[in-house]
Length: 338
Image (cartoon, rainbow, N blue to C red):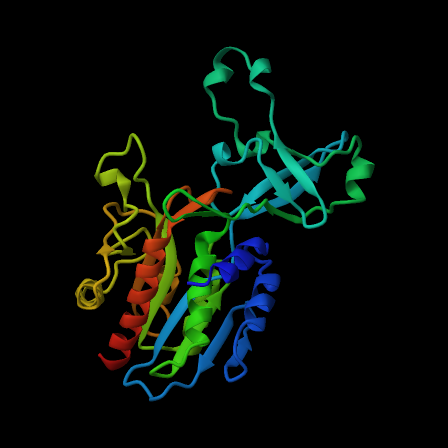
């Protein structure tokens, strides 16, 4: 696991539809013996010759985009109205710093001292919030910002506690890091990795890429919700830190291939890594688009349990990241030979 690479990946900003900077950085980290193609959607498709030709063509993918914000209007006094790109709840944004690249803003709402009556118990909605960029007029704001500009959570990458990592955009720069490392190694079989776009707004890039690659099998590398925090019962914890990689049987967009689901747990036992399943049918990922593409593709998702997804403070346990890396590599070999 390359933490310096991961830090750089999470620092780059690239929400759905604006992944170019992420893609350019990934390309710069790939070895020269890879074949690289960028399709019309912006997906990066990378192939590398292995020591042998696999029995089955297997595609591994992870998405480059992160959740973020887009400016929709500017008030007369210079505040920015905005909406979210991807699923972000209002409670995750109030008071947060956001970056436009060259300058910073603060997501603002009425202070608690000014909230009265029933409003005290109401959570403000996104359309009630504004971004303060430190100006006093619409004219000043327009010199800095245009409608349709993106902004992002400020990144704060650090280790804490017992091997816990905090950063923005771990969903899914973790998967991107894993694939970069795989492509920089010497694969046993020919390797196809796809860095997809627009996952956070409906898995739009993955379906196109899957049609182009047309594999027999696909492995989706992801982050998934760990809600093993105070107040959650066992079922609603979804998955837990310290229990290894997460393999799903079903989410809101996919019923996963049963043979591959069982194979993942068998493989984890064989290689001596921890593996768990999600205890709740929730969320979704690029599997939803991939498994329906090109006449049908047998698909499995292997995810890192992640607390506080789609916020500025995603947190993972490094032991789970390592378990996910090892299981993904072993499953790739199994599927090539299946």
